[in-house]
Length: 154
Image (cartoon, rainbow, N blue to C red):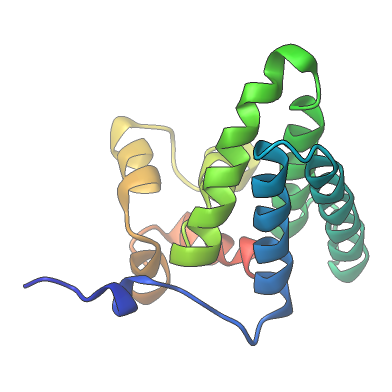
């Protein structure tokens, strides 16, 4: 049975966080099209988002703050001339989050020692990266990730 595209898309126009990520994706796209101010704006938005979430959360080590901090650091690292080509990674990743709810940064960070509840194994790595976004929330198949993947959307 083929799943219609409308059921695969995770558009959340009522969520402020979704709009922040969507605007960031647009800024990164503008940067990739030659408007370098798009990169600077994306970094600024990401930095503001990190500070806001840090103030909002009970701990600077909370998962939503970790995601935004790591994302901001990645964008800043991409400013180094030999690493500029890396801007494709956060651009594609941000569009994957905005359109499909797949947060690559959350999945990567979930594998760090303080963020996981089971030892690293090939099975854990495969489940982390290959489980569809809805399965995390609806099925709760990966307990250590099910609540944490919401960190991109909170």
